[in-house]
Length: 423
Image (cartoon, rainbow, N blue to C red; front, side, top):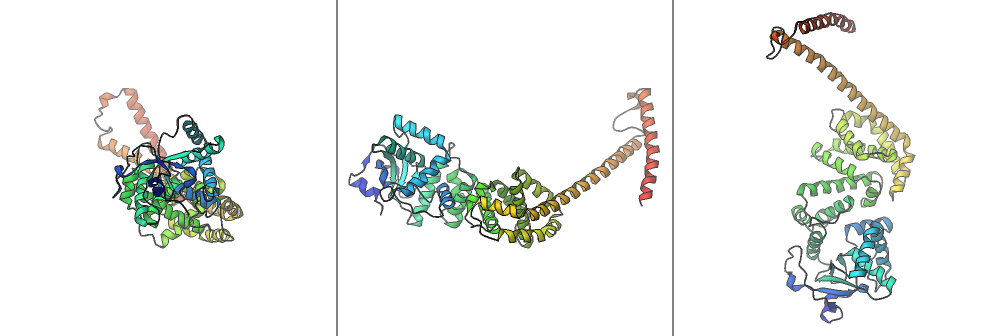
């Protein structure tokens, strides 16, 4: 059972530093004057398993973990501390050096049960220093009179978390998967904030919020397609598929606003092509943009989907031969589906090549018509175009133009016979 830090503060078991915090956003029924910064023994604190970055790492490595303070069992904090260090070892080393030499310069925020809302890296550095030096360390933080138990509290905690971590120009650079998942869970899954609320606190536009939500929803469909858990977001991260899915989600929103059968078929075609891209490597974002331009935005989309439908079905059968738990599992299954991916690639290349041939034909015809337009302009201008006068030309230039027209006339006659033979 965790301690109530507010009670420990009132009884004097944890001391105030004397600093008065300034809240970065407005929280109902909570003002700066009601809060203090405390020196909190590390044993009373634990990492926030509801944090987007941390929860993704937990799902990847352990599936589930029970959040606990060091006083109860340090194993949880030890595991999360490893994630923090792996995420940015250089930044952690710099923070630890600064705290060792000058003390903690920036206070954090914690809930009354010890859950850390802001200050993961500082807490990690202090834990390491406590082990290395052997002396007790203290995390200086504001204690907020909240817990995660009530939904209303969670909404206010999220507002504060966003304001601290993302609401300034020096905001934390979230991994795009972690950010999108946090947006989706906060707004759609948990209903803690509106899109407008989130955009205001995070310095983002509502359109950015909507695009990221759409990407997570498409990621759910993709993970289902490959036979993985719909919340295995770490597969998206490890396979570097967030940006390709982001491009697909934006295009699908405009091309298939009402979704429907054609959307479902196109989606499965796109997921299959993503498999080919992951399997062969390369610039998946560029390849997805080419696919959207060459196939989805063209009149060939339905024919392309129909042409690869059988290959997609066999590909899905291979994906469903067993659950996929990691990006490594996914890549292994793609290797097993090499024949189907090759067939899908062949159809894709044939479709694009046929389009390019069509574009070349159109360009060829357009050039011929442009030549005719020039000659018609010359005819209307009695041999010249625009404001030109024959006095602008030398005798040699007039001869050159005349000889060119003679050659055009002669060659045109020969070419007419060639085209007559083709009819």
